[in-house]
Length: 438
Image (cartoon, rainbow, N blue to C red; front, side, top):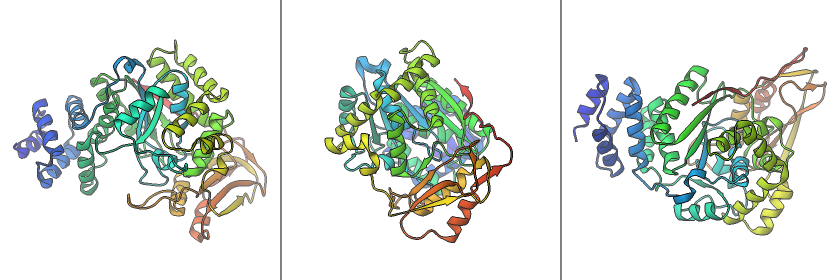
């Protein structure tokens, strides 16, 4: 295959044929193309872009480079959700069991974190015995019996994406919207869901800093997924302030359990209801989004979601006794840091800002996240907030507890001090949701 011809087509804005894209990806997956040629192709896509039809064909070819799940008669109920990531974003962990409690099937393939905190997989692996390494066959069995399974992405799923992503990382072509879109949607499409919700975040602590860039990515992913026959919606959400009050792997499992006990932070519950309500409507289980949201809230408050979560934990390797204790008193099961330092305010006022980006950097330096993919995660460290935007604090009142192993550095303390801003006037909290696309 003449890769240089494809590169010239991209540069000349001359669309590649579906046949050529499919052949290119097939050769990539079989390691039959020299890396320098792949680099040239990626750089061309990054610099000149490709159209939505090319992106859809690329995504489909990447999806078909590996295993694609088959669901038979259950297909209309197969759903999933993807988030572009944020600080305190633990929504997948309570959402999947809540959807299962409402009758849907959720085969969720998630990744590890490379950044401020671990990904969904890292968080779940804080639970003693939880096995995220599930074969497609095991996932299908768990889905059939329980309705939800959260597992790590593996080489059997869209292997061409793994090859391309590794090269994108070293060629500085990660921030190409067509390539981001194909990478995300190919893996989700391999699950073969009927319906998909995308949480595309924007703000200072998001991958996409501006609403304009987030909207472009959301539109590309929605159009691509729809082109593959998946009913898809994207929710544009703000990511300037942390979601919920816990940041860190064990801490976010604790908050997830609290949400499924019906007593978690309202802002987190609202996001779960928003995502789940949309999926229930798209799957035809609820009449509209509002009814779907009410069903999700009921699953969280009634204990139905928590029961599904316990069953999922056991199915994925957690001892039954440990799983029950986790669902009752999670802090007694999960690893937590040896030291807790609580910081207080010097003055009083209403919380005007909680800088999620600063807090992300602190939690990563504490060990909750990675600087390199080979880094180990310290599940027990993180931040527990005692306040939220719009809340009134008095002088000397606790606003955050730091879970750490070893001493806090002067730089960490300074960064934390600069992470909260108080106002002398009442502050209104902005809605997370900016817009819905699709």
